Image 1 (cartoon, rainbow over the protein chains, first blue to last red):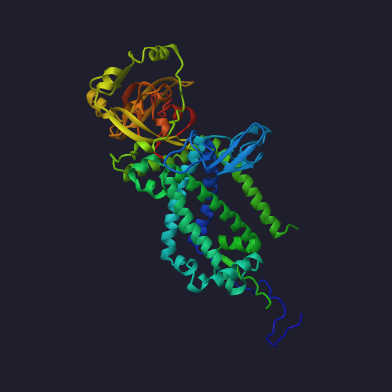
Image 2 (cartoon, helix red, strand yellow):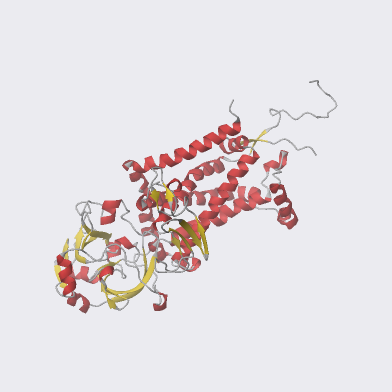
Length: 283
Length: 251
């Protein structure tokens, strides 16, 4: 390779020349990895608790003699999931599945999705209600820190222009074609990313904490407005489950995006804070 | 050579596997399970801190009741003694109050039903997740406690039950804040009928700011104690002793 002095670069920039820039603050990285563990424990121990009564209702009350809007169960030959009037056969995954020893089990969610893997409501609750403190206190501290260090105002809140339907549509198309931002633009969150993070941070997480608290009979006495806010304890339990499902879906998309955007660079930036700018795309 | 992508994929997959088997192994360790109890302790303290001692559980309208109130746990205590009681409509059932009290006492059901009573339409929340709303009528526990004269050393009320639940008789315990709470009653009626056998006839505890397993059925003795160590296997209740459920059931 010969040196060229005309300033034109037609060779790709070698990786060592592309700058490593500071992207994630310590508090963000810390909270991210605490949550990576906490949220998985919450989801999996939550499924164990759900298995104790795999039905969801709307309203103040709901038990076996009442009509659930969602139910996981089994008949003699199949597992099923019923949502409203829809009945799906889920044998092997939900309602009826085979455990590691080849035994047929009739619990709603399978052992690989629950903590612990064999049925124990008391153990599932102990994990859930301990890690719930880590989750809730973590969210509160992260809110506080991220307003104070202006992460929310500078990096997460959309600018007015980003909220135009045309801009959003453009971003959706870019995502669909897996065209990720390069160079300096990769340092800023795009609008779909901002909305997803804001949605989790300021909608789903507070919703899941508050609906969780609404299921506590003691807190119902202390803060009866919780019952009115969500329309009853069984409604709160349903919303809790829906919010958990949305968080699980966020994690799937999040992990997919990390893999597609370059997992080494992305994971490094969440550990060390430093991110290698992706090379500019040729015009 | 292993590519970066495969390396990361491999790390991800083994981290997932490790997480799963690791959680099971952690769960089998008594030390770890004990460590996780910080959640229960924190919840108990925090809830007591923010909650008014007398804060009432929500009471509902008659038309908000569950069409059918689901019974759970023991539905028919076994044994001749209980069968005899059902046969003569609990005419000889006695409720004893003893332990750390100045005046141990014993009451017949006729005496209890003649006492001042409280009716409340409340929600019963099972630890499993379901809820049922019903109307309960019974004597406020506070009246019985005041009658017997609780000694200063007493810290817990223990409810001893007539139903044999395998390794031991059912029992439960609550602290004195809940014991003196205005909605804490020993109920003898459900939905304006004398308490049915599956719901705990003739007398059951209603402690409305707690999950269902605290609401002891078939209660025949209330014992005031300073410590739970020497009751049952020492954890304060049947489910706590046998299945490691939390003693504090406000959440």
